[in-house]
Image (cartoon, rainbow, N blue to C red; front, side, top):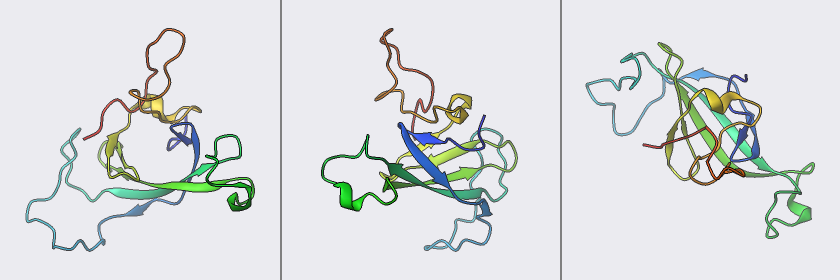
Length: 134
């Protein structure tokens, strides 16, 4: 098991370090009522980590071209993960603005995969992973 998904829809993710969101200034100012965790109800400040999603020569779209692949890879997206300090539940904001709730299957070597778009095998069933966004 990994601390965070090592792959996102089949592409490798390079995660940074965890930091607190307690000192993040939001414009407009935060609401009077704190946001609470959907799982445990904690109102403590979330932890945040940012990951870069990469492609490699085998998965790169033709438009990227060989010259743009840095050290054999090219950045294709950024993910922000928010962790509840109360229960450890993670939610990921993807490059499209979709917020995903992670489950235990997202922390394996296969990483996280949208069950609606990838992972269907011979059985025709999608494998575990990000089942729903918010």
